[in-house]
Image (cartoon, rainbow over all chains, first blue to last red):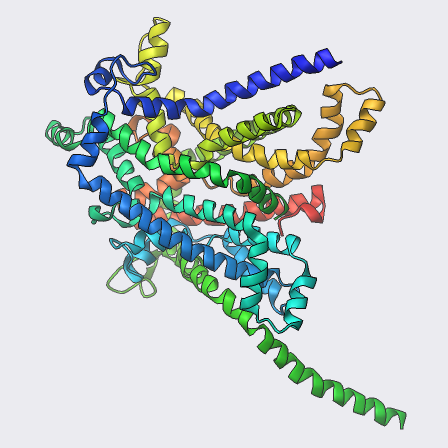
Length: 296
Length: 323
């Protein structure tokens, strides 16, 4: 039995290691190709073991192009502002919904929940944000549409509050004369650190990774491109080249297009902060998503 | 006498009930105020666009505004459903989602069980961290990763793997026949870690007594999995699957638009309702077509969510239903 269990453990670990390698491999390939010499890339393609390394892509990227640095600034700005506003609104929405004694609670919960069931879709949203609430071609295009408050997150957070904060604690604070904002700030929030960390990561990621808002609403203002929108734009340039539209236009794109290695370098720069920050949140993240998503 | 006192009592109740209610409202006012900013945001971002669905039944003339534009009945829809696109995008959206649901669930559960069986705590932690990585990156970056693998001139597969076997390079971005597999693999690669963690959390919660009882009854590891683990996972499987079925008319726009790089030859096999709406709205500027496809998606999607929830109630009981 013990012997059998040991061989099972070895087998299970081998499968998990293979899976982990599959998850990491594309990232490794990406990083190595960003460090590969350009002529080597063109001759032998992306490879795990290039014969010649070089830092040229990164040097070129930071020296010659402030496009990338400004895109980085815009990503950071929209992520910080968006996550700050979104997190605050999500917490403020979830807390009243977690209070069983609040009159009208069910109607309020339904108001939030219904946005998960039914949606107007892209067309009316696009028309509203371009023609009526004019966020297009401004920095607000990256902050306001779609990302700030997500009904699913509100419900996740509400579930966390209801299951983890005893009503008696809130009741006691109220008897001691604390107002609702004070109760939320000094009692509920300190007791909800894992959930808040998860939420910060989730909302932060959705801003950091967002390229759709840029694609939809920043068509005439390239100076506001964030890193992801820029990456997306360059991807489309490659495509325009490949479909062989007309030779002159293709040549023009080829001349202005960053070379093969630089593209990978920008992708690395776009993804690196996520890879660095994530391990710090990981402990809370697994706890947070499982509490909110399964029970919610 | 007794009737009089009853009447008095009733009046007292009415009198005290009113100020009490008002008092309660004042006491709850801060809570309503907290709810307000988010509610206003949802009103703007979600509810107002819902009313915009009427665009599909109009011929929009921007000079008159949406409300004053002429009604055209269902002509946008008849036009849409006459094209072969309507069938194509519906088929693609449904079939891709079905394969995501079936394969994704089987894989996520298998890995979750495997992860649960591993005894080393530290290794468990490491695996969990790693399999969640793909979930965290944007689909644009995923497209770059896929491009690094598949690019016909510089891609890893053509240059390293196929070369090693002496096979001819394949022009991946112009060959539709490979794409159903590529998209399914890419999608599952990206999300299996997340689903796996959800199932794993349920597994950790299973009472160990069941396993001990099974061992006493002489159950081997496989029998334990079939008779204890899987039945305990069932509620989670039902909930997650039905949530996915409810969203079966929606697709990840990035996966179907970015990963195939918007490539023309692949269009028939890679376009879904979401990419179709985007292309007809922004590339072709065809408001009638795109809004008709959007309404089709919203309405059928809504019906499917309701159906999915109704069937959870029937199969899994009230407590598993979403609402």
